[in-house]
Image 1 (cartoon, rainbow, N blue to C red):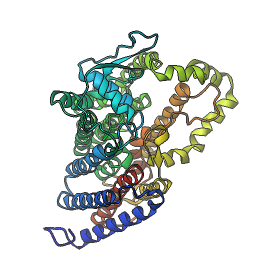
Image 2: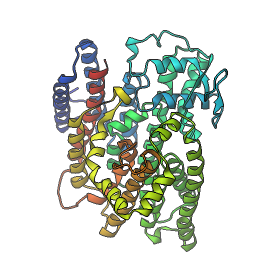
Image 3: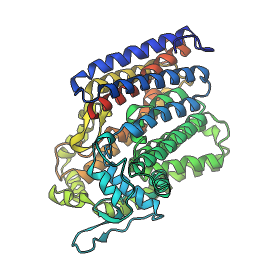
Image 4: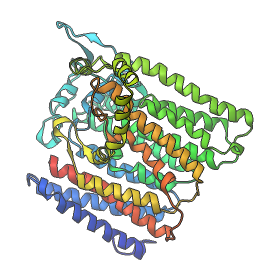
Length: 505
């Protein structure tokens, strides 16, 4: 691969050597986790990710002007690797996501929380094979027989099924599961095909977003291939849908920022993406405020300008209506008992905050104090007792991303006013995510605001960072710098896969 191939010139070869150096460094740093149970398998995966990484860099070298294609290829290649390597139901809440996906695969768009026959308990009807997968949570497929067991369609009941999430966030997974059932495959394919279709949709939406935006294409590429983003997209989680739709909304904002005449259909897509992502994470409805950063002269006329801004109220109304519904069904799961035993009550929590200003100020300051915890959780993987992470990867990635955001030469100069407004919108969403979790997950009067807060909720906010921090005072060769940054970004994705294999296989 380091021989000359078409336009794969000297600087590309250096990037391959840099990539190899990173792989060796990360592999050595993970030796402390090594149990040597399957060394040949791990060596094989190391070779595989090296080949995938080299091909990704080669493909980028031939398609530097088609970053949407580059994003598609990188996400699919590394994502498919995660689809098959990530252990069974190992992603956070993946078993519960699988139940909802299977329910949607039957054509049921809402959920029925029913009394389980011959029992006083309530739950959701699904198929027995998902129980089998759940019993093997955290295990790699080599240590189970789910790859040899046919799909069991017998009825069973599960207590939780993410009924608070909208159905469309499970359509890709449902299609994969339906295909596995129609083809009468083994049980593991319910998981694998569900993950695969979810990944394809994530990659497609991200590719569309990068293609649509006229500026900040490369920063959007870097954010979209964050290891945690690919890890979530290559699972049954609805977070892949949420992340990609938020990125699509941001891409349309950038399109509006540069286009001289905004079309009504594009405004419709912009607000649709915001609503669809906001129904999954309500604070992201605030992405609609980005419309205030669009220059007035880019609207067709004053009427369009006024209607575009008025639509923010529609987003807010939809969000409030959905929040009322989702909150009402949230307890129809294991969360109900959790809320009772831990005294979780949003109304009481709000009353406490409003009646105690000093306490409220302390909780508000927590959103700053806990920022290092959020950074640390950007490389937090797996679920519950089987969770694993790497503080080394988290620290190095944040250093890498901050340097990237600061010095990478953008193709647009944003003025101070736009940067300040962007910061305020980003902070509003950041603060909103934490406070929503505090109201709905923390015990009344809890001292920390980090209950139920995970870094994956903040992934779309990373695209705000280059917009806000970038300083156009450095002179670099943009082409060379892009190759270096992409090489490092790919190295982190590879490191995540190596870490998973080292710990889980």
